[in-house]
Length: 109
Image (tube, rainbow, N blue to C red; front, side, top):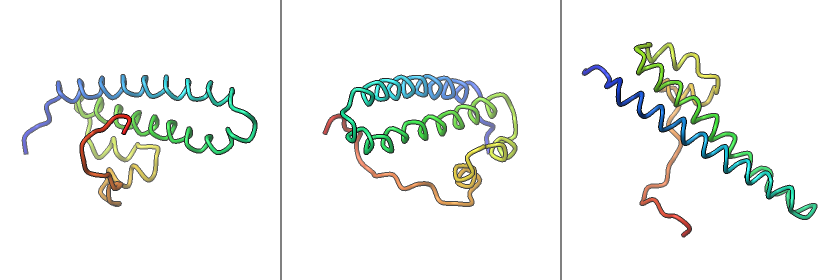
């Protein structure tokens, strides 16, 4: 097996980190919009908004993994240090990857 392209991995980590920042910005705006919703209406939205936090945590883990591998650390050690148990199990091959719908990326369908 060929060694990993560390430059590419470092660039991917930078992209993931930037994406995390953008996701955090959107989550912040959603939180501000929720404060303006009428009482009772915001309750159902809270769970949906919490999904942004989950995505942010997962992006943070991926960023750290990419940075670590780019820095020459052993992938197994990095996966063992993943704080999200379900994600660590998937990355370690102990659980299947989450199902992702196939298809083209569509905005505002």
